[in-house]
Image (tube, rainbow, N blue to C red; front, side, top):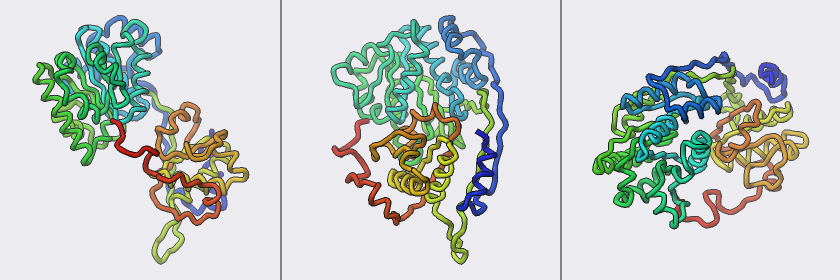
Length: 391
């Protein structure tokens, strides 16, 4: 798709009032490979070569070299730069070198945990790990297999809630695991900020104290693509010094960022048009132009409002837009409006180009179409069962 042609198309539309204030273009970037201080185990390197993941990008090699030197590492490279290999490789190298070695992976969401478990199994199979070596231990893990996970799992995938509620209070039953724990991985570390981050920091310090009791001193690997102060954040979260890896060696295509400022409609008060209505106009223009698109909003209600307004703005809009997940029954079209990236992750591999929009203003449901097209399923804050979410 020619983004410049679409920008010119936008400028010719009736709702355009000089909202585009700047267009920033980033040139494509070629991959930069890195050298390891010592080679990987032969089976692991052969597996990487078979998957087309060799040679390593410079930041992947730098992270592995730092971990081998005994440092804790914070990887702060952009999304889709291959950060997962920065912790998969040292963990697998440790497991291949020592049959007793253990690793703990902590993810903020179950969906991310399952996705990373699949990527790990793809990398480690066949031959590097057995199926029982990697296990998920969270609130959905049935009681019948929990004891087996404690005995046999070499990589345990969990979350901070379960670490706090289900693992650390019962550390005696996890004694062998803690005794041989070599790595602790904390992915999406930027999530742990504010009060929640303070709580997680206390949990990680409890983890370190228990590991010390059992004679281990695991290294920590933190990852984030959206942290402005990665080294400071990592040190405050874990309470240890960190080496930060920020120079991205992965390739990247060219990008254009369009800065869009809603127009002023009341000059006396400098009031601007709602970001939600602007998002709806943009979504309608994108779909009419034949571009598959995603719009991100801060709440589910705003997601539904943007969808309804976009439907009104597009001839045959219901056939052109996919409804927000779980609200409208017919899902058979090209575009999606979502309040959470997780609910739309299946679309990402199929999107040749996407227009991301984050809006936070409230738009009153003044459109009569909302009452006809927008069902109100009771509570917006949770499922029918209510109660506390399982960790």
